[in-house]
Length: 217
Ligand SMILES: [Zn+2]
Image (cartoon, rainbow, N blue to C red; front, side):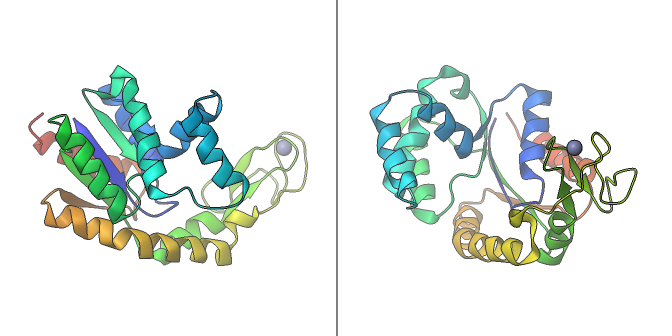
């Protein structure tokens, strides 16, 4: 089973991918993990990518594609994968299709977990974190015992910059701009399935299981 999971930041697609990984024993692959693993080695391709990142530049698509391909040096992904966070644009999607085609592999389905931007902003902007122990809370769904105080060490909770509404809006804008064409690309290929991510994790998971149950794999 070869799956790509798409969806805006904060929609819970990483959680969903991890649940699928545990349930079906298929590796959950994220570009973040691939990059981190590569940076722990002295592989020249990692050093090349690092140079861009250290300068605050985006890693070019062509290099990102080659880096993703390094993940296929390990056999665990040869029989199935759940890709999360890649491909991010049409150039990457085309390169990935070509790479898979050359090996007679194909993506079985592209699951697009989506919800309204307001829902995501509400979810993410409610997160609070303890600056001392790193514990995370949510002002609605995971409250500390005392408002805005860490249960573990009574430190006052803070809101990360990443979780501020302006930052989230900005990230969502970038996400939509980049990935709309990718969604369209997979829709045209007949691979796209939409999942409503506005409910809780279990709700999303039920919909995804239904999709997977309908696949022949
Ligand atoms: Zn704490």
